[in-house]
Structures are given as structure tokens and as C-alpha cells.
Length: 153
Image 1 (cartoon, one colour):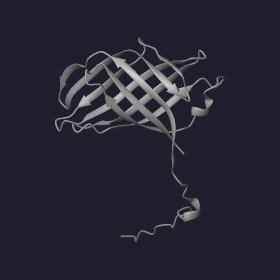
Image 2 (tube, one colour; image 1 turned 120 degrees about the vertical axis):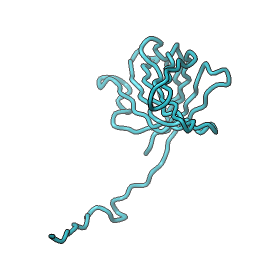
Image 3 (cartoon, one colour; image 1 turned 135 degrees about the vertical axis):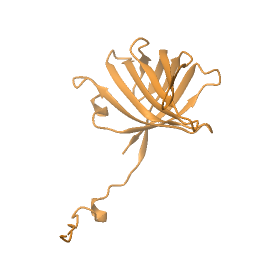
Image 4 (tube, helix red, strand yellow; image 1 turned 180 degrees about the vertical axis):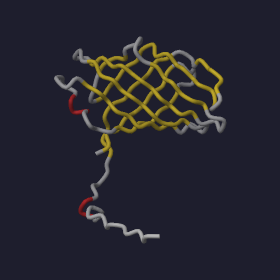
């Protein structure tokens, strides 16, 4: 058997590691219907139709009600794997797409990682290639979710 030789990466020094920070970006309040449950082999699939909402902060506007939804999986351990697709209409008339992927635990811990696609000819091209994290909170009545996003710098 041949001996394996590993190369030594040249880019692992401290001079190559960037500081990580979080800058406030925007807050999204998603208005949605109550979740529809579908029993599946991996857990319960949940679908919430988005009926409206708002975005405020570095992007201002509303959520398009007919082009989005939350598609989640409620696992046997009580954790929900969140997958949300949201279409936004900024106050200056631009359309944006927001994708969330994350977890909600039974203790209320709600975190997502997110990406935004914006028209490359528009005012929100600053979102291109950026990574956002968000903290969420489901309203007590179950009809809305508010997520606060931070740009990872």
C-alpha cells in the first residue's frame, strides 16, 4: 500500500482569515395562512401560503402574496427544517427573491441563512453575492413570522 502524502495548504495562516461581522440589513414580516400538514415518511411536511407582508431597513417594500410560500419539514424530534421562498416588491418598484433555509426548535430558537436575488440593473445589486443570517419569531396567533436579517461581513 502506498503511503499518503498530504500537501500543506498555503492559505491557512492568520493573514488569510477574515474577521467576521454582522451588519443589520432588513426586517421582513411574513403574513401567512396557518400551516397545512402532510404526513410523510421523514416527518410532517408543512406548507404555509404567504398572503402578504412587509420589508423594512436597507430594502423597503412589500411581499408579493401569490408567488411565495414556506415549505418545511417537522421532524420527529420536534425541530422544523424551514425552507421559504419569498418574492419582494421594493418601494422603488424592483422585484427581489429571498430564500431562507434554517431551523425552528421547540424552545423557540429560530435561525435562517438567506440569499437575495435582485435585478442586476437595479438599485439592490448590493445584495449580489452576500450571505445573510436571520433570527425569527412566529406570532402567537400563528398568522405571521418576523425575521430580522444581518449581512455577514
